Image (cartoon, rainbow, N blue to C red; front, side, top):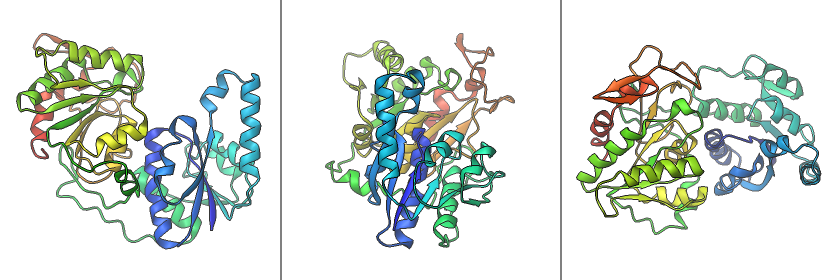
Amino acid sequence: MKCLIIKTSSLGDIVHTLPALTDAQQQIPGIQFDWVVEEAFQEIPLWHPTVNQVIPVAIRRWRKNLFSARTRKEWRQFKDTVSKENYDLIIDAQGLLKSAWLLRYAQGIRHGYDKHSIREPFAARFYTIKHTISRSIHAVERIRQLFALSLNYQLAENSFNSVDSSVGNFVNHSVNYGIKDFLKQNTNGNKQQKQIFFFHGTTWQTKHWPEVYWLKLAQKLTEKNFQVLLPWGNDQEKQRAQWIKSHWDHVDDSVIVLPKLTLSEIALQLLSVKAVVSVDTGLAHLAAALDIPSICLFGPTNPELTRPYGKNQCFINSEIACQGCLKKYCELSHHDNGVLIQPACYSSLNPDKVLSLLKTSI
């Protein structure tokens, strides 16, 4: 059986789709998937053994150069590739107008969310078969249910194994992303017990944890002989990493600014570290997919439906009343021992609190 998936972005959303492929693999032996995905994330689907082909798109880049010769050429290549195969099934796991628009070139029965279950209801008009799935469950479970209904198999009752699922506790979700074995083939598998990743980069300005907090946490960890790794993906993130390193008052390798890494290189590095501290960003979900103990910090965003989902995952959110406001800009601030903290919602998520939680996993 050969199917097509439309799930173009973002990084976290793509990672959330992987457990559904593992379910399908277990229920339908020999099933294969082609996957339409944004070019920046095309490494990830190929880590899963059921993915036969990745069909990259560049919607973000194409929008900026709609009429260029390069855009027209790449668009023709996409249409030719996606239309030449007669698929047994097509699943739009994105649920947006842009994804529904892409699948109109593909040949096969089209499955997706119904208008009550989808973020952009008009997109449901493009599907042959529509499925009702609750919007009040985690994104991973929504996609698993969409695949089960589309491919006509029964999911086992979801196991939610946790000591305590409340904020500030490490929990375990019974879900298999299906990528760890592939990645382990390319690493020696030796875990560096004294390395911790800081995922400090994210999209919204309001989701950034204050730089001074990253620095203080790095100082506290290095005092305990941990080595802090600082990755970066763009100039702004590189500058933040270099600022943390430059304000480190020791001339040693306790704090390391890594070179720019691909997603595959980050995944391999993750397999060797002891833990991760992260803001609300796609790389946090990659850490969860690899079962790396992680603490994810939430300020203006709501963790309930999109928090990292896997083994040894912990999230904490602000105790301030406006937490989860979903604002990309915020003027509220707070002073913490003379240091300006903005947005103010992070003032209750200080380095001491994060360190106390890390102690339970490291």
